[in-house]
Structure formats: C-alpha cells, structure tokens
Image (cartoon, rainbow, N blue to C red):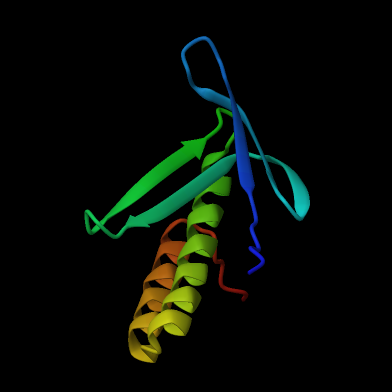
Length: 111
C-alpha cells in the first residue's frame, strides 16, 4: 500500500530575548514564505486536550492581529460546521466574530 504524506515546516528566528523576529513556513507542495503570526492547535486524543502554539513577531501590528483573529474565527466557524453539521453553532461563532470585528474596528459600517 502506498503512503501519501505531506510535511509542514516552521522556522522561527528569535532575537536575543527569544522573541520571534520572523516566521517562515512551507509545505511539501508549496513554499509559502514569511508570516508575522501563527496559531496552531493540535488535538491530543490520549490526553483529551488541545496542544497549542501561538507565535507572533515583533512587527505584527495590533490592527493586523485583530484582522488575523477575526478571519481565524470565521474560518473556525466554517470548519466547525463542516465537521459537525451544526449550522446554528457555526452561525453563533460567526456572530461573535462579527461582534469582535466591530469592537476592534476590523469591520466598519459603510455610510
């Protein structure tokens, strides 16, 4: 039986205080390049808990972080709906994301 595999690599450059200066990542299929932030969550089945890695560089601006979180919440809602078929909860997550977007000025009403 043939095994299909994909590899994802992260390379984080740290300053003298071990604060990320740059985040480079690539996958087997594509080189994505530089990033200013990453949120990685991995489910540990044996421990029944989430393992996480949150990274952001010194150059990540507050406005960018707000937009990053807003977009991540929308994506999480879509993923949750596909995984569980729970449309109402996915809508609730998106409603909160919208609230977050308004509070952080990521979403601005057009007048």
